[in-house]
Length: 251
Image (cartoon, rainbow, N blue to C red; front, side, top):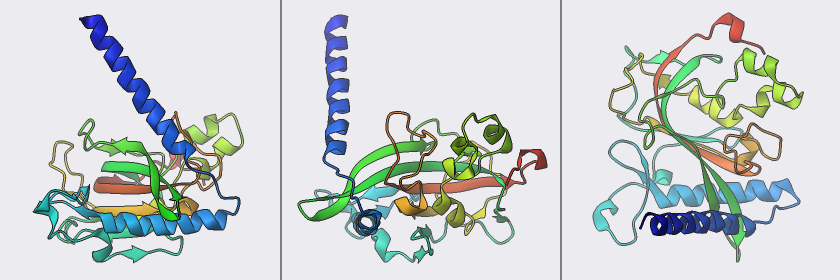
């Protein structure tokens, strides 16, 4: 009986892996990066039309069969800001720290985040542009339920860059997501919430591939797949921030 179960499990894993490969194979990288940039912008707007924020601030897709979300506001109908890089951020109403408890996020601070970060590949299928593949980067909400401390995609510390054996891996751009860095600093951090504190997500940051890694070499956040041409979506709450020790800063 155990063998039968293992065979079934192996088969289902194979099918899942093949499905992911098939999805990626439908994508053909445009020679002109401007075309990919256009795909990103169109797919992001479609994503914002197809999703909303639930009572805890989680991004949820609208159901085609359940009417309970019919009165929810689409992400695109919420107040949002677009930065020069094309990065979009949404501050969720009623979920931000008060003036008394909020802390400014510094350019090199150490962050503690409750976060779900996914990467999405935009492509055109029969003339319809949308996100055609997705990858998980971080998920403390559905995973460990413990906040993530000091993620590399926000700031890479000196010791990692100094220990790198190749020139490209010594660069900040190899690790950090530019659009996430610039947008997260528009938010305020809470005053060091305890890790067990129930989350109430502050908002969303959507980064087009040109403000992520575009077609450049990058740190393997998902070891199985490249993030080349992938846009990224961050759904988060900043539990706390503190200054980084001077000996871990290398600009």
